[in-house]
Length: 140
Image 1 (cartoon, rainbow, N blue to C red):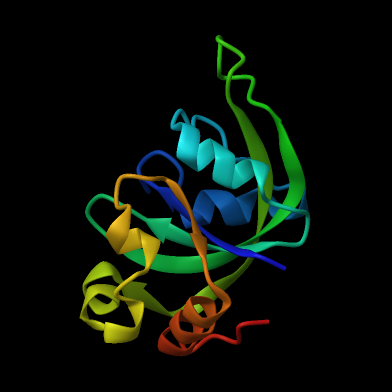
Image 2: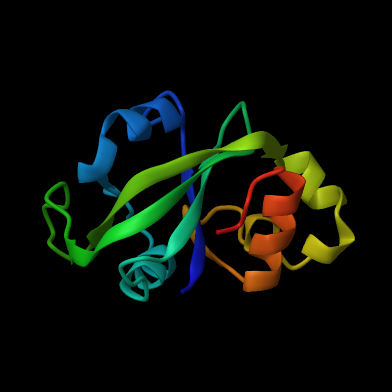
């Protein structure tokens, strides 16, 4: 299993929106960056990801699971980009802020910091476990 972080503006698509989609999940559409797109191409069904509210909140608020691998994004008229489908698994018990991530030495190489403009980034297993611990949430 691999781990990821999905960034979303809560005014556009929030954790609550994701939860409302239930087991059918929602396509992670609108990604127009090649590196983020390549990250999604690497995803497999069952991979887990952090759901991160960007903009004003800047915090990890939940965990999602990939339920459909990379496929065409119907919002892309150029047909160059695709998407994965994810479903909400559970909220984190305690949101983890960007400030906390930046203040944690063991997360100095975390892509949320290093590649802050990307909307979809990989997370190592050690980073996953540490952030789940910070979030007081079982990593499984």
